[in-house]
Structures are given as C-alpha cells and as structure tokens.
Length: 296
Image 1 (cartoon, rainbow, N blue to C red):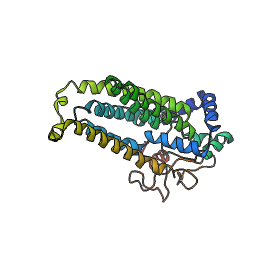
Image 2 (image 1 turned 90 degrees about the vertical axis):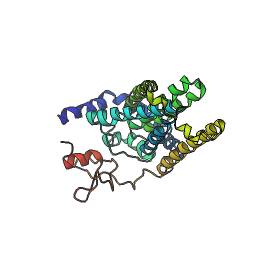
Image 3 (image 1 turned 135 degrees about the vertical axis):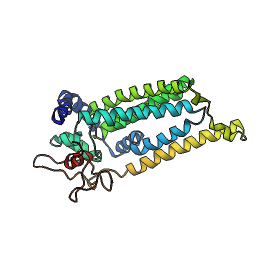
Image 4 (image 1 turned 120 degrees about the vertical axis):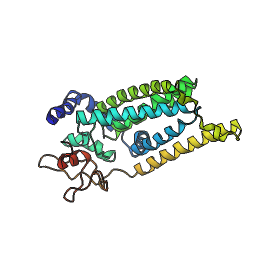
C-alpha cells in the first residue's frame, strides 16, 4: 500500500516539474544575504515555534467577549489546517523534499546552498509553513473585515504571501507544495471563521473574563489588553525568528540514512524522546519510522 501511495508524490514531481523549476529559477536569481534574512523573517510566521504559542494566545482570547471571535477563529483554523496538512495529506502523499530529489540538479543545488541549506524532517506536500501562515491570515482577515477594519485586515494576507515566497526562496519546498498549502490554508481559515461564528451563538459567548478586571477603567482595560497582546505576539515572533538566523549550513546534523544511490539531507531528530537514536544514529521522521517499523 505504501508503494502505491508513494507514487502520488512521484506524480506531483513529474507533473509539476517544469512549473516548479521555472519558479525556482526566478527565486534563485534574486538570492543575496539580505534576501535570505528577509526570507527567514517571513518564514517565521509559519514556523512551529511561532504557531504553538499562538495557539496558547488564541485560547486566552477565547475567554474575553471582545476577543472571543478572534480566539476561536484562530484556534479552529490552526487545528483544521494541522489535521489536513500534517495528519492527512503529508502521510498520504509522501512527497520527498526537493533538496533530496533534486540533488543531481546543479542549478537547484547551488540555489539551495546559496539560501542557507535549511532542512526539515518530514514530507513536503503541502507546505506546512504556508498552511499555517495562510490559515491565520484568512482568520484574521475575515474577523477584521467583519469588524469594519478593512485596511488593517490586508496586512495579514501580505505577511502570508511573504511566507509562501520564503519557502520557495529557501528551496525547502516545491512551488507546487506552496500552492497546496495555500489551498489548505484558505479552507482552514474559512472553516475556522464559520465555526467560530457558530460558537458565538452558544451559551459559551456569555462567559467574559473581563469582569475580573471591572475595577479598571474600560479605556485603560482596552489599552492594557492591546498592549499585552502586541507584546506577547512580538515576543513569540522574536523567540522563533532569532534562532532561525543561525539555522542551516553544513553544521546541521542531517539524517543518517544513506544508500549507494541516495543520501537523505533532511534534518535529523536529535534528543527527541519520540525519535530516539537507532544503533547510535539519528534519523529524520521519515526514515526513523521506516527503520523502526513504526509506519507499519
């Protein structure tokens, strides 16, 4: 069965090869040290180190009537997007990362090395970073539009677009992976918004933690709340972004899996209780599951 499913990723490679290489060429032609930093800036918005804390923030927002719509929309969007991308699509399609399948393509390889040689530890389609950034962007866009804040609403799709481009620029995803992530993100964000509207019609909407701060003037509460959320999101972003500046390069511990015809360039899972070393060697998620028999 796994061999049959594997052909789905191979089919995507063949069908979209010309398109993917055409787009790779565009992004490869604009590479520079500055652009690499810009790409890492935008890619942070879809990074796990950013997304997980945002889930916590969204849960907190759900307890306050004024922010509940945003909290539930973000929470539902992220859950739906994660389920579709990481639980369903990636394990079903099994598309290998481009830096593994295109190692013999000298043009692509020079772009990959030039962009910092970053790596991930799982499958490629659809792009998880793109899914994350787009689902949050759609969630925020719809919520802000419904509140009449149309100008601010467009900031989030712009950030998501930057994240999409960054995944291609860094050469860790095929452009077609990013298109897939875009579609999933739009679906997740839209469903998240619709589910949040349903929740708002239930007794849950009567709960309001703001009553705990009723002794504070309403204007001050609003200012303090806005400041706290802004500082929290900025702190989360810096927590995820700063380490990314030093990621990649030749010093990254790669997957130990190698044969006569293939060397895996995925990031190895190191010091991870869920993926312990096998015979003293560390592997990426993909090959660890294969060698341990966990995928059977």
